[in-house]
Image 1 (cartoon, rainbow, N blue to C red):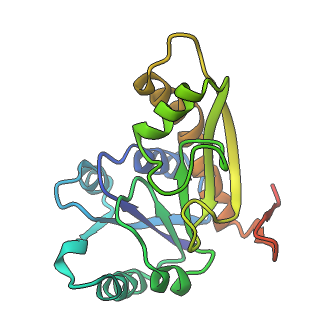
Image 2: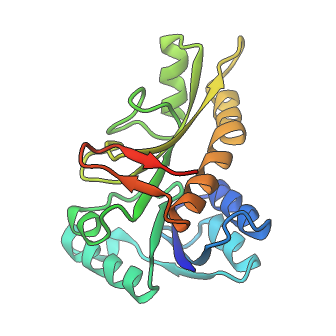
Length: 209
């Protein structure tokens, strides 16, 4: 049984998708053991507490520099025996020390089909604003491993979502969450916990369903 630690900053809708999947028995070889927030007021912490999941708060501004924060976060993650770390709307940058300490053990959900609309500055509504501005007919979501390049880690799963006439960024964001993010994130977590993801030397993955 792998220990899953989820990092959050806000409402925690993707966290809720993971909790719901766990409660339905869809992550048989993993358990959410802790939720760590960068924001003490994040509603995601209440979601965790309602499901008897341990919580912790660690704020970047409480540390003098990135390395000091990174070392504190790594210490916290190791104290929780983290096997898998899931970034679910976590708005604090992870430094190289964290990434190197948990190589191919950190996954992120991004609201587009990488390599489209990704990289530095592409998060939240901006991703959907840019997709609509470009006039794409299909968008979606991507679960990927985290490496030193923003949104540049090996892709695990992707799911496409149709862009519809009259979409606003808010409407499209909701559809991408419901039809893609909340489906593929629990699936990717389950695959990891089942040891079915192999990261290859060329920064791609081999998935065994």
